[in-house]
Length: 342
Ligand code: 5GP
Ligand code: MN
Image 1: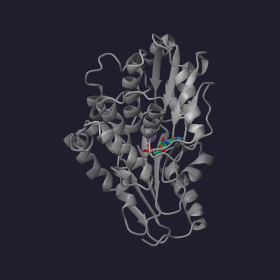
Image 2: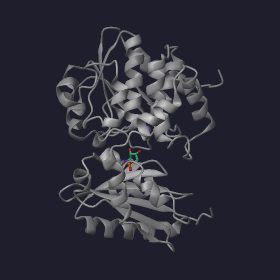
Image 3: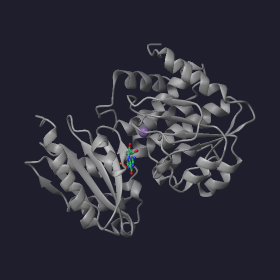
Image 4: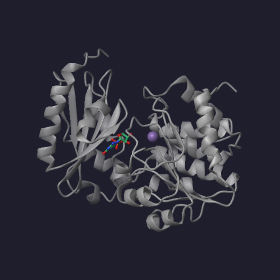
């Protein structure tokens, strides 16, 4: 095969395998509002761990969005997110996927911090890393955490079954925006090709994830797009989700995935933002960039993070206050980068 791993990666993958013993109970956790990569990585790893005789369960801080439930077909009682704290208390090993920080584990952060069992982590975020000790497999150049799980499987000669391949493909497909974003490296496509070789159907996964929308998702998009504001001279565009709109359309916040891309799609835009209220007095901001603008660096002083071209932060205040603050900071941040010609 055409994928080679560095000596460091081989060592890290084998160190991780060494803590996995048949009969043990491993519980997998990803970030709040789990996405296709967090869930695809978890389900892919569950299948791989089962092949090793490890009992693997999933305990996430917030529920699985409906459009990813198909990943759990044939895996009854594996997603135990509704009793996550209890599940984490039974684990011999915790594996944190697609995030390296306690802060993004929501209400599970304290339990993970205090459990006293090894906490393994597989992640592709640029992050300070605040988890308890355990094996690490980290690479911020990877497009998706799922890509790293394929590498770990290869390094240890674990059999990649088609059900594992399907879940891992979903992780790579979603984190690359369907193989369109700048994180789609030759290596990403080689790994995706390995997964397709297992006989999985790319159109079926596209349909499950992107073409099974409830009507409310499209109506929510229509309403959100009405709020679009563009500042062409600075290269800023932003969209605001009207408070209560998600509930009114009978959907979930997962249905906002991709809305910010509409702001980014405007010619000349260098930073696109989506504002939404996550609770009374707390606003979440999703950021996307074009060219050399680093939204992870922009978000860091405000306690946020993510990737160079896709990041997020949350902040106390009203929608109007947080918007004024963040947009002002963005106007100050943008002139430092060279404008991109597209
Ligand atoms: P999204 O805007 O789709 O929620 O997130 C885009 C990227 O930013 C993801 O990689 C996500 O992990 C990261 N991200 C989103 N919100 C936050 C946040 O509040 N804090 C940090 N550190 N990262 C975030
Ligand atoms: Mn990811």
